[in-house]
Length: 315
Image (cartoon, rainbow, N blue to C red; front, side, top):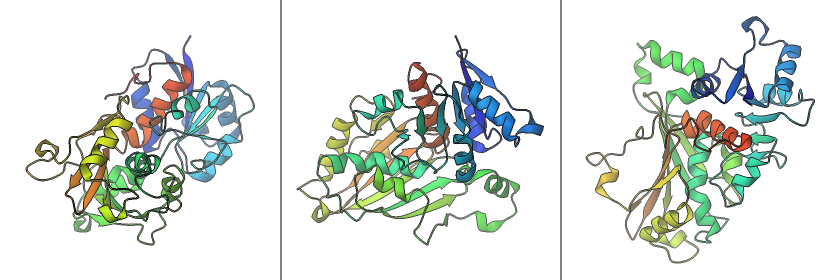
């Protein structure tokens, strides 16, 4: 029997990508809303309650509205907004977070897909907190560089229209240091407060990497960068979608430069440690449209419906 899937917010970047992932699946039946009725509350209610799984690809307020339309105990909601990512009533959709997280997602009726920057930051920080390598009060300093697709349809149109020289260079943003991913960055790492975090958008479509800075004096116990890399390897040893690179290996770079886009088209996260005995950085790389959004949503759906976790996804 096929799984009935509805995408509420099918015209957005994340919704369209989810349709792309599902297009070749024979185990799902996609429920589509007529374009003229996509803001019709009753029609959305009908489709949500007809579905086995509904993806909410909407702004926060609209996601909350749609979540209230469920009138049965069967429909699984997978939300891609920031509305529920720190809610105790919703499973955080990052199976690799902790040993118990995969089962938590598998049995949840409400799943919140992590933010793209947050996924990268959490996967690089959580093992360090869990192992008491850093104190929960650690003051993390991080930046992220990402492709412009993460900014949605208007930003994509602005970049692809061309003719604006200001878009040729990288552009830091959220400089008020209140980025919307900050609450989940603290809540799901075990840190007592969020990082000082600056995202940067570049003139490329997709790809993302989050870099965080460390010095040995900041560690809660003696830790070399090589030991941090070994800790990552142990923590993610059984994770199919997480790859931990060798410490400082030349193969990690392209003629000395880091390739932010190397995971594009995959659902994989690559973790790196670069540096020396005096200072080092961790870098987490992913596709902001894949593991950073739609791919993660599909991974969660696969767990929810009992499909192979990697169905339709690229390692």
